[in-house]
Image (tube, rainbow, N blue to C red; front, side, top):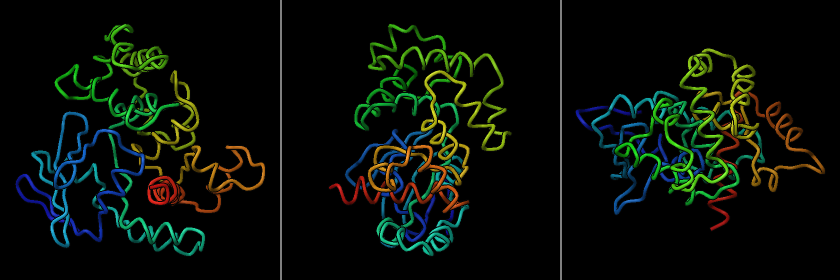
Length: 266
């Protein structure tokens, strides 16, 4: 599925659809380039682009990005499992090998607190300015907890500044990050929702995009618009689709989002 060399990973394009993976709403630290994309995570970066039937990832952090892009998971097996649901087939066929990333936990928590009631260009700009305070590296909990509220306001965090600061302090002063990794999905979501600024949707995004719990189905406005039945509430919709799609509900959510919000909306 992939091979590694010094400063390079080569992946079959059949195993990694770059555009779908990066633009499906799970990641904010990426920029388009002339040939592909530059992706940043934590203090690491890579350039990723198509080359014939392959995708090339150029980076000094090979092992990090093998894990980040979840390259050991057979995404096409997941797609085959979900293809038994007729309503998912158009999205599955349109999205290629979209991959759920494995992102750093603290960075994901803060990024999705910033994402609340926000749009992607603005989210990306705020996160870029935040990382710029530390040499283009995402701050640690201790570093972020030390940033004054006025500085968070100055980079555009707005009302989220207090949530970001308070959550960073909790992550810096307790062992919650370690406990989240060890917890089952239900307990992890309860812990996440104890953090300021983290509601159900943000908790679902963190458990899916960082902790790798593919059974979780975040409900956003696009899911309400395209998947809602009758007068379902968000929680009723979430429960129904998670029961229906089971282990791979989170993957179903991502292909549905990319298909409806990105492909059909452009």
